[in-house]
Every structure is written in structure tokens, then in C-alpha cells.
Length: 263
Image (tube, rainbow, N blue to C red; front, top):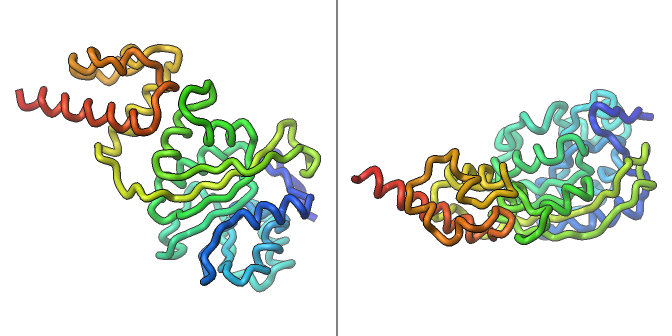
């Protein structure tokens, strides 16, 4: 048996009913689909995923002990296991097809996994995952909430988010000290932003650095043109802006900056 390792944030799912609900949440076309399971551990999801004819299953696992266990119990997947850190992977090295990601994400790196997904969003069509409820709440939350933040805005810019169900600590070994939740992200139709992507990310991140301040004060480090500070939207705080309003604000910043450069 594989020993759960605290430094890897491992909490192994032991409830087969919950596992089945997670696997069934993966919405796939009838043809073969490249599915990447992150952190399969002892293979509770793996076993169920293998039974689906529409799934071409691949695994990403950083724990050497888990890799050995998976190869022993699922020898047919031996050539489809990538041993290493998902955060350092280039998904295009695995395949040039669209990728569907599934997994019980380690709590200590779940946010980093989503930033990785954002980087490779043109290849990642869907994510079904279990993670700490607090992070799931943050990702799925809409503007106007205290939990709405950087991940909420950036992920909702490119994905539709569905909050599926909550999971109690008792279904894991060892049980975590917090509740978990399962969410599904589905890539939307936004192929590119109507503004500079780098500036958009920068504006969103800086806006939430001092979320209690108005945007006028929170964005001061960006040295924005004077006419931007005069906008009514700058009286608001970051948590009050929708994705579309962040895009609009970035467009206005771009236009004002262009005007300053021309002068």
C-alpha cells in the first residue's frame, strides 16, 4: 500500500461512490478523448476511468511509490504514466490533441495547477477536479463576494465554471482538516482578448493586491495615465468588477497609454 505523504499534500480518496461521481462528471464526446489524470495516487479514479471506452487515459504522478504501485496494478498503463511534476510539464509534448484533465488535486498546489491550465488553455478543454472547498468557492464565485479574486477572474475569462458537489473529510485517508468540493471547468469560446493579455493579467493581479482599496489606489503602482484615474469605475474595488468590466478597463488603459505615447 502507498503511504500518503504530507509534503505532497496527499489525501487518498477511499469512497468509490464519490469516485464514480467525479468520473461521471467528465463530459466527453463518444470518440476517444485524451484524458490526463493528475496525481492518481493509488488509482481509485484510474480504475473507473479505464472502464470508459471514450477515454484514452494518461497519468501524471510525482510520487515514485505511487508510480510503482500504479505500474504493478495497471500494467496496461505503464507506457502512459509520466513520472514528474505536472507544473513543469509541457502538455504539447504529450499530445497535439485537446486534453481533458481530471484528478483529486493536492491541496498544497491546486492554485498553481490552475495557473498552469491557464497557460495551456488552448489545449486544455475541460478540468474536473476535487480540491479544497475554499479554493473551489473562490474559483466559482462571482463578483461582489469577498472570496472573489484573481483566480476567479482569470479562470472565468476563459472557462465556464460549474460547482458540482461538496465532499466531507471522512472519505479520505488520511482525512483532511477541511471540506473538499468538486468543480468542472469547460473551455469557452473566447479565443483571444480584445486587449493585451499581458496587461489584462497585470491589471487583474494588481487590482486584488490591495483589495480593500479602490482601484484608483490599488493600481497606482502601474503609473496609469491621468485620465484613467478620473474614470467612475476607479471608485470601485476589485471584487466589484465582472470579467467583462476588467476587460473594458484594460482596453481603456491601453487606449489612454497609446494616446500618451503619441503625444
